[in-house]
Image 1 (cartoon, rainbow, N blue to C red):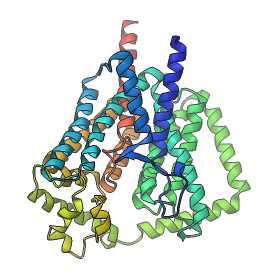
Image 2 (cartoon, rainbow, N blue to C red):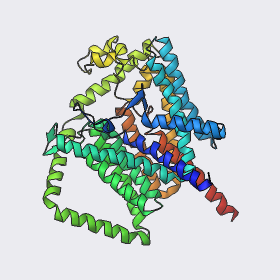
Image 3 (cartoon, rainbow, N blue to C red):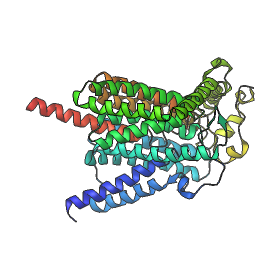
Image 4 (cartoon, one colour):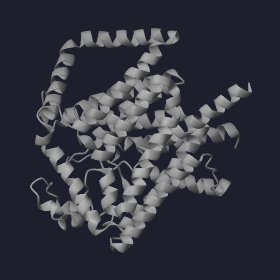
Length: 437
């Protein structure tokens, strides 16, 4: 097999893995029966299609290269070992708390996530960082577009004439983040395809977040808009990009005029969503009250289980054993969901604090700071637009981590971090080449 054919096959495989991975993030969540291709299929507990493809690829690397892939930066190596360390803690907590064996499989999944992080770096080096980021956004945008289509057809609940997004903040969180990531793709664009995907992903993410009925998804998307302003201002500063920007603005203006009625109805509907979610005092918001109570509950769980926590599926039992859970401020946990190990504190940091004790909280806290550092090492060199984008990424991921339990057990954080690692290395090489030249 010649080199070019091998690279093409590798590119196709990488595209399939990253696209399917992105696809799983914004699929509709509903009690209505859905086609199997609209559901995130698990082969084993917590193992999805794209992860099976990763395993096959790892076997291929084992056969052809002995699985040897050098980690060229200490920062990437540290992140890899911390992700794997979370898996080790999960296995230890499962054993100490005598949890079901399926939770061991769930803990081992972090080893696969660590490997996926390294593969993302490898693919970004081989096929380009924009290839990885673009493919990930295509996956999220495609499933987000289907979610929007079904949301308008099912209309399980409405406000201001607009339907709620199916799954609300479940898919709304990744779609809100995709607005920020699309701004990054626009900043790094190499071709017109990059710009097209960035714009499409931005529009789909904004539309979805605006009807998600999730205050936090809306805030993430709003942070993405700020990132886009910084990137567009940088774009307008380049003479060759002004014509394209003028054409896009003219197209948007024409669409707004032609569909004036629909646009007006949409704006009124979104205003209704915003008024309903942001009006009134924060202290009177029941969701804020229950989420803040989880901090107290988790602290009580950690005081009783400081070293090993209660295991990844033991949150319900841990909550029921606390005095804080009896407060009227507490969320009423679902016993059936708790029995299946599905209860969680709706917060990634609290989830690992309760599941793995202080060591778990320490590891995810360190991991979060290291990923932000990876973003900063590259984006700080991209001027004001890069600094603004870094701030939006930091805010977006913090909101995601404080409201959803899936920041550290999915690739939503790791894949963009891999892109940042490769971009940083490329920038350093270019800088050295410039000095030598």
